[in-house]
Amino acid sequence: MTIDYAAPLALVRAERYTSPGEPSAILPDVYGDFTVGGIRGPIPAVLIDRASNTYGLATPMTSITHVYEEETDVTADATITLSTNYQGQGLITTISFASARSGQITVRGIGRVVDGDNPISQLEDLLAARASAQSRDYHTAALERARAACAALGLTTAWVVADDRPVDAWIAEIMLNVFGGWTRTGRGLLVLWVNDARWSESDLVAHIVAHRDCVDGDDDPEMEGAEDGLCNALTVYYLWSESIGGPSSRLTTPTDPRSINAYGEDRHSVTLRGHRDAGQVAAWAARFFALAAAPTRVEGAIVRFAARTPALLAATEGDLIGFSWDWGPTRERGHLYRNEVLRLLALSPTLDDRPRIDVVALDTGRFLATDAAFDAALAFDAARPFGGDRDLAER
Amino acid sequence: MEQRSAAWLAQALAGARPLPVARLRTAMGERVWGLTTPEAASAGGAFDAAQPFDADQPFDAGSVVLEGAARLLRLEGPATAVQPNAQLLGAYTASERAVLTVEVHNRDRAMSRLIGEEYVLRQVLETGVTFPGLPAHHVLVKATATVTRWRLRKRSLVLEAETR
Image (cartoon, rainbow over all chains, first blue to last red; front, side):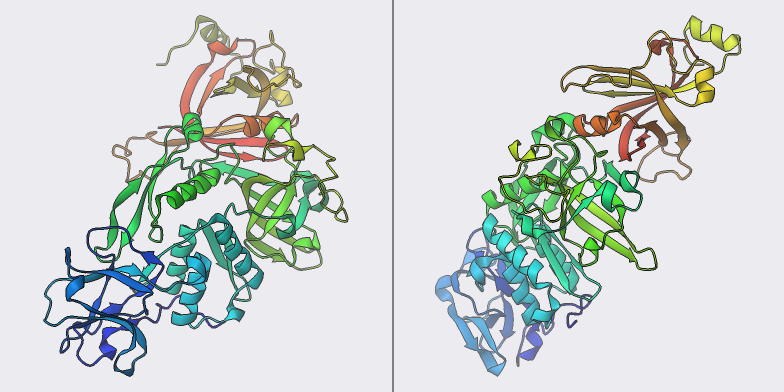
């Protein structure tokens, strides 16, 4: 393990240059497209050389379209160098002026583009550059699955990284913006996942049938739903501007009408700092409601059980499993609670002479199309619809 | 003093054994649950002997549920919150915010259907007391609360509700 999750990111400060404005000021790392949003530029530049009126950004930018002093466009007065080894301190972007400027200098443009602005690739790049992360720090399969999920969802994010928050806060922030989650395994590997991404049967690490695999059979599982996590209306702030330290006055208010009809409105607000596109915010909210608004009553419910099967020995938090428990909540068209897809949240193995693994899992609201959980040797294929005919259902 | 029916009062004066009752209302209908213990059954069992409980009551989505079942395993509360909730003005008044717990059996899987097919969170749960043989509308309601949590197991369903 090489990542220190509690330490702040090792960001570039102005003090490494000879005549900075404020030595402690952080030169922002910039990822993604910041061409829209706000009146002034969303990316603040930092004065790194008072003698030459030069401002800097830690990232060699892809492009800069506008430079602002406060809310005045001063692009014509600025000399922009997208990539320069300034004072031999490494490649940065500089913006220079002929005369001294009194107002805040901000820019609009496109920062570092990694893998088409895929949020997972941006996170990987950020951790490699500023937290000394290496490939061995990741649960590789989960990383690639999360990356592919973001690509399939068409998610692109943009970040100005310019604050002292520790590494784990940044991971949480980025995973919130993809509506995913993260954890560390016992071996210190970073596991990332994206909620409600498309998954295939090969992503399911095990099939638990309660009466076969639980310590007390069907008596063992307990499922819990609570109003604490319920949310069916959101006020979403996005188009974050690091220059003003807030979202640039855009908000949307997506709701889940079915859930509101059932439970009443439960509104929360969220700031998605990485989002700059209304369509993506709407898609994010739709995926969020699919889990948090409990539209079919069990999404987001917690399932606890103790498994005696060795099948879960190799599982890690964040993995998906198939779960069948005939005493669970009835599902669509009267189907029993079979082949539901759960996400493992916590695994506590007891490895004595009667090994068991205490599991806490989250109901994703999804289920397997074919009911093959009763025989581990059975292949999943569309030709086998036995047991519940759930492959005929809508989802 | 809370309002009681004449029949209720007559039973009380006659020293009949009181039965705790829970009533849950969802958009699909109403359920009134009484005790299932053999002891209670000998004293009248299901609180309405005139309407025997049918464990295999047919359940179709959309039909109105009017369950009067000997299903109650446990009824706690309202347990008054000991510590005042600082976020709630006036919470220093006792019973301002209290928690009820109702446990009902699930041996016929009816509660699995309830959780799976009806919206239970935030619905009204009432607890009250009645006497054997009285119809459901004679129940003396002691607390009205909103369901905040459900816990489903093979044997039973636990509903937690808060008065608000």
